Image (cartoon, each protein chain N blue to C red):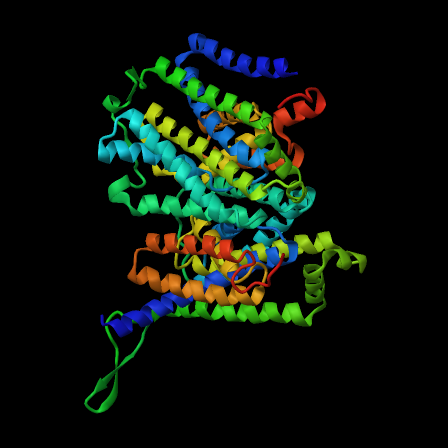
Length: 308
Length: 312
């Protein structure tokens, strides 16, 4: 393949990556923004989403489309409920102290991961995509008679990947509408800005926290359900999304939703493109060092508001 | 007061000395490992327990010591003594560099920065696979594991070498925390702002804590590699950053013997669990959760609170 079509293929892979990453990182950012805690178990909620998607689809069987739709709705709901419960039982009791929360969520990380190992097992398992038509893509060429379209061999994308790329903007718009247009969004924003004052206005802050923790986990799970027909479900799959979400949330500014989306697209795209052309390990070394140095230079994140 | 403290710590060292002659081989080997790991945990405790800096990336110092030792043996043909020095220097250098950068942040950002640096080191070990043997790691040949004429592969000598490291670190820590510098570190943990107001250069003290902590951890890593003859990337991975945190939390952060008690308990707990199931890390998760919820002070911390207020 020539460079042009190859690059286009990389961009499309990058978009798939960016879409999933946007959802996952948004969950982490939402939790940090509202609750001011770092959830180290976020990657495990992603993993649980994928595993539950496998469980639901294999339980229902039958048509791939219907089973997948059930997983798309069911898995995030279940993961959200698990997360809200974990928040109520654990995080609420350590009073959302930032350091103790990190230690507690490390504990949750191992508990979720190891319980999955005990029940789901160490194998990677696939989920069939609901539709998977291969679409060949055209590329243009300057011929003798102007621009000529042709179909290079290997330049194609599946309809399912297009669906994944489209899913993130839809969820984003929905989340934005909820945050800006509904009463629930108002409560969330009030808690995020000043939880003390919110409490004074009779907002049940602890219940809001449980809900936010649940929504954050559900967003990660949604990303996982979307990605699981492309990559298989595995009990250790949570590490990479956690790392990438951290990177995105830090580059985008801790707790800033707009910055998070921007950074997710940027990082997802570049990760997708870089791993087509370079080795993924080198890309990851580079990315982790960039995050560390960004935090050292600007503890509030690149686009974040400066806090003292 | 001082006599009680000396009696307790020298007594512990004496007890471990006597145990060498009575333990059956399996536990004998375990206790040797636990003593080296306890030295690692004490290094961690200096930062977390005494200075109040929570690092999530201590495996990088442990691995720096281990790889500094192992690689200089493997590729430069160093003898054990020189290789150990290289390992300790590697731990020291990395800790100084990381300290200079990471201490510009505080709180959660500090935790993430240390986590990221550790992850970068782990990935670098994988990336330079042809040089480091990546995931597989490498075995240090028996012929190279001779330190000052002593065969470190011999169980008795290995036990005493581990005990020597443990005793050295324990007594050095005891000396340090009673020294004015140690007092300032504790003051920083309690209230950094106020310590600075009293005229202490808190940044320098914190840098000292990170460097000393990293050097002790690096030494433990180098000694572990020498005594047990294996250098591998798994020691640089996230669990080995979490373990010292867990050991210190369980035993009691900011207590001297806490790290040893925590390492001892957790080691046998994991040992028992791994006999039952593959998912033995579940024990780690549950222990972390229970500790944060119900016993944030750990075993020795609770003892100190209830009955033994003099415990250092």
